Image (cartoon, rainbow over all chains, first blue to last red; front, side, top):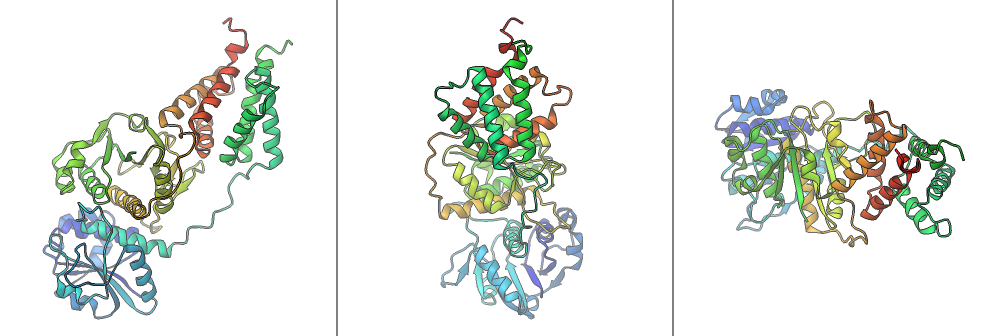
Length: 240
Length: 240
């Protein structure tokens, strides 16, 4: 089922290109343009930057209704609070709802012209408003940025982060940690840095430090190699 | 505490303006530009579209280190999988971590040049990678779009600020980490453990190890004390 982005009355063709790129980055392909001021246009192509195929496949129509005929659920982007108390969603909730409705049919997110946004007539055709949270004193998002945010939220729902793959190097075992700590303690004692009458606090701090790092086997080997290279006895020429 | 966005080597000034707008929309204000190719520039101003104040207040520096000296936690944006298995987070988890660390000090998210992204040298200075999930066949996000997504996730957290209590010991800053790594590298070179002609891989592994531990100031001091105690020159009686 289609997951559609619809741009209504877009003024700057660069924003159409940036929208195509944002969509393709997040795996969406169905773009419909309702009465764009300039399209096709070189600025659109330039900003698409690898997403020209999305632009070429974009449908251009005269009225929003034509873009929505086959849609079962529609969200209309809006920064403004409206006189009528429309239902609205933030991007995360909206993406979840769209994904759910998308099982049954085509869904769409609609964005209005850069300056004015969607009209009340347009919003009448939407099931919900999509409102992106912003700083209260500077709420006017670039339209392609708004597209990017909702497409990102949609992407997150599709993409299951790969199950943490087996690390290349296995983690150090408890015994390896202990051998390392013993080695460390002996080198620090030899050097005089650690008071053998009261080693506890320092060793505890060092244990905590290395445990925070979740050492792997290679890392323990590197640290032990360093300790061996820095052993005071060794650096005194071994003649004691 | 500052929540900083850092752009390294940005090629297209329009992206700097779009970044400023994305930040201001989501309530962030601290922008640092590391060696931008063109700045100030009319394209940056045009795309800022109401966020010119962010551009005017932006700091321009020559090297990433200058942007990080006062930072306690840094995420580096990266689409690429790396040879060394870096720890990485997706935007939601990363925003949560940044917000938590932000209670104790300044935090930053770093974005590399449009074409090439951050270098391994840059990533060495980051506590984690930030990886934005995308469609596998078209993963190259516009940089300002990537900024928008992480700023959006940060904004969402401000609805519900984390409860995390002030840690007893403040986390180490970027400068403290760098001084420690420099000290470590010099001691390892002196001891012969590190080949000065090819220090990179070992130092990178050690950086990764310590960054995983999220060192606090005390821990860095302990580690530097150990390095001083184990310096080969010192253990040869200091007579060279």
